[in-house]
Amino acid sequence: MNKYPNCSVNSTEIWSSHLVLALGIPQLIINIASVIFNCAVIITILSTKDLHKPIFILFCNLAFSDLLTSSSGFWISMLFIANPESTIFGSKDILIAYAFYTMSILSTVYNLVSIGIERYMAVAESLRMRCRVSRNQSLAAALINWALAFFLGCMPLVGWNCLHNKENISALYSPFCVDYLIFITIPNCVVAFILPLFTYLSIIAILRKQKFTLGAHGQANGTYKSAEVQVARTSVFIWLLALVSYAPFFAGVVLDATNRLCPTDLYPSVYVFRNCTAMMITMNSLGNPIIYTLQVKTLGSKLKFLKCPARNRIQAQVIGNI
Image 1 (spheres, rainbow, N blue to C red):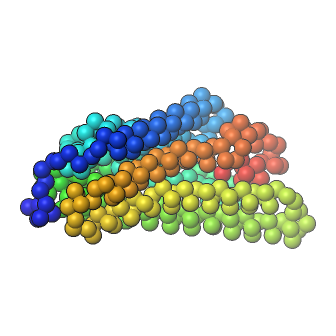
Image 2 (image 1 turned 180 degrees about the vertical axis):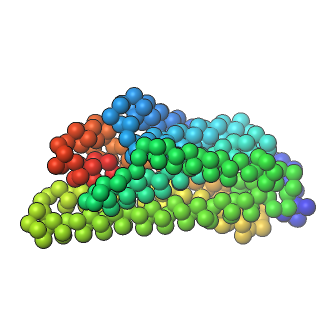
Image 3 (image 1 turned 120 degrees about the vertical axis):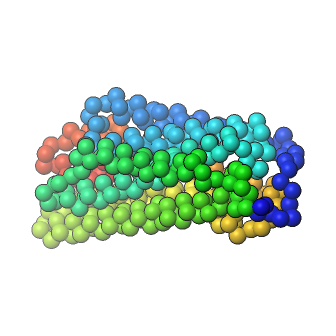
């Protein structure tokens, strides 16, 4: 049964070569830039012994996720340029590419949440017993993130797809099924937006409380003020980047689930929007390493903080590792 009873599912040449190149080439360029940047981050962390810390393990894992996102995005862009009709009417090749793309996006989301939780634990425990996340715990979190992303992302490859059954097929992301997109999108959007926002707001509240506590004992200085501002700035950047990058995709899924238009009726505006959402997701993969590793002065500055005297280590970790 066809989801679009009044439509023909036969492929027709509705893409112009100029539009395909105008959309495909920028996607390729952004994906290549993201691959290079994330590879640089991975090599830097792996080759620097002083960066083999729990938080940097999570940073490195995030870079791996973003690298896979960019690589699979590059793959999808090449398929789009070679055969744009396949991104409308679906094919086995695009199904495999979309599955890897979904897996990488989910891993990125889970890694962002893990980093937020690690930062919260680091700040919350910094004035207590300093029971911090260990390296093994960070590795375990990374493996769990990948296992969950792999399980959810591979569902279309093991049967939950509409490659042959057109009854519930997605108009924008064929051959994915609409119910699969809803199942994946809604809970993970909540995880990606709400949980990190709550986590980083809690970090800011903890730092504010610590500053007031030190001030009451006559120990206040500019360090905690600087840390609070830095955490607030980085937190807002992280949340806004995720919001800007994934909100258009979420809107596209909602449109996909509610529309009953023929794919040819959606061309070109809705499909141009779809390709732009893919570029926004890649921009998130490019922006993540910038925010997490370069926003607070660069990895070299973080090394300086790791070498601070013991009496300044708490403040240095708050500023340098966020």
